[in-house]
Length: 79
Image 1 (cartoon, rainbow, N blue to C red):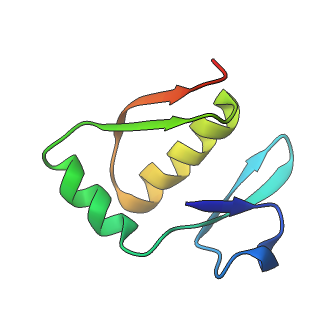
Image 2 (image 1 turned 120 degrees about the vertical axis):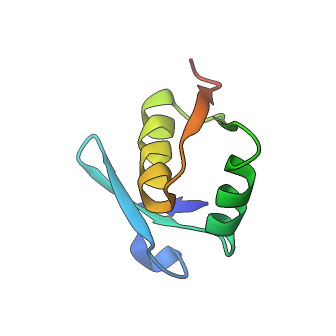
């Protein structure tokens, strides 16, 4: 994933989320949907990032809605 508050910094805008009234644009990497669907059929998905927990949870919710998968665990280094 790539995110930015500036839409023009990304090759395309696949989704967005709001974090404290700030609109954050999301660009999915190619084949992400296929990867998530194949791996979620056999494994629990875990999201980890050094970002703040509120940002991490918001981003995971967007990915889950967009790709029809569910993450078993969401961890942030800043917890």
